[in-house]
Amino acid sequence: MKNICVVGVGYVGLVTGTCFADLGNRVCCLDINAERIEGLKRGILPIYEPGLAEMVKRNVQAGRLSFTTSYEEAINGLPADFVFIAVGTPEGVDGEADLRYVRMAAESIADVADHPLIIVNKSTVPVGTGDWVADIIRAHQKKPIPFSVVSNPEFLREGSAIQDFLNPDRVVLGSLDREAAAKVADLHLPLRTTIMITDLRTAEMIKYASNAFLAAKISFINEIAAICEALGADVKEVAAGVGYDKRIGRTFLDAGIGWGGSCFPKDVKALAYMATVHGRHPQLLQAVMDINTDQRRLVVQKVRDCLGTLEGKTVGLLGLAFKPNTDDMRDAPSIDIAHMLQAEGALVKAYDPVAMVSAARVLHDVVLAEDPYELAEGCDAIIVVTEWNEFKQLDMARLKRAMRQPVIVDGRNIYEPETMKAYGFTYRGIGRGYNGCG
Ligand SMILES: NC(=O)c1ccc[n+]([C@@H]2O[C@H](COP(=O)([O-])OP(=O)(O)OC[C@H]3O[C@@H](n4cnc5c(N)ncnc54)[C@H](O)[C@@H]3O)[C@@H](O)[C@H]2O)c1
Image 1: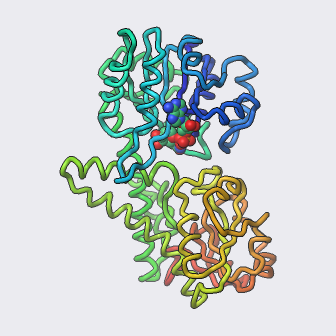
Image 2 (image 1 turned 90 degrees about the vertical axis):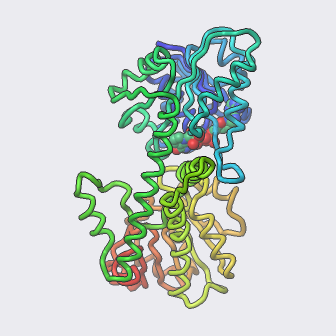
């Protein structure tokens, strides 16, 4: 059993802290957001993540998991052997990663720490940040207390975060202090996975390279989808056929509206920024981002093609979260799509199984529906934006009856063109034969 402090109680911090507690450690989770911490103390989670609420409750009851806004309490109270930094690193004005929260966290840790610490950086940070964090700690310490900085990039996916944390493909640890990295490795031994120890910068780079590759895979299949539409091929079968090749693999080869969320957009941009600042020309990364932006325009264009004009039409968005099983609306394609539709004079309706509250904060003048059938009422077209499982088996006859015009633009290819045609819909998928309609 180790004592762990987790700084930043968002998607990554809360899952990390809870899972480490579940593995038998004593964990204190800290956030500067007092409302968030108050809620957690009362059992209210700030995010939707399957299975997390039960796990938090179980570990709080067992006395292994606690929440605070006090750095003093979180670091010296236990006292913590390890401090994980899991604060946000949003996009800065020029596409760089904004490190202000990491800096604040590092300063606060240095201000209070009264014993030797291993500081583990889990936030996705530009290459070189580990060294910078060490400089900040050194500069802010009241008296010189030994510490080490270890980079431990996180690869979990929202929606399956607990599963991913507990069953990772690998754990990456980067540090110039091999002894400290080995201690962090020990914490992960119960996960029975490959633990890779590198230097700090290499570990930081592994995270960016991973996200950039995954984003590239999706943009690649979207480019192939566009070519499929021109040539009358079906991208779903192309992806399956290509994906059987072990060198390629089937995952992340789903053509559609493209990627969004809290990581890929900012991380690909931040990697391109780092490359540019160092005199490189990240042409591939640029193309990966451009193709992704085009996909959002493409679905709007498909609706316009079907309806002739968007002016005065009602368009329903089926799904709002950037992907299923999360309520995260950060850089969700639905936001851009809603804006584009509204800019052309359409009334936008929307429904999502869990993201309605978070969506209401970022979507304006959008009519929120209670369920898919209420959404369909009076719609001239529906766009499938998020591939929630519950959308896959809708009562299509009922949906069609509720709509003013039976037009479905399936931005996630969850339906089959032939089936939808049989129901009497004008159907457009992405890359499903000529113009995406089989
Ligand atoms: N969300 C993901 O799926 C995911 C996956 C892998 C890596 N990451 C990376 O992990 C990091 C965290 O992402 P997230 O989605 O969990 O962020 P988040 O926005 O959900 O949570 C960040 C939390 O940090 C808190 N915070 C900010 N400054 C603080 C400070 N000085 N002291 C204490 N708390 C502070 C915020 O109040 C917030 O609760 C980012 O770098 C992200 O790129 C995210």
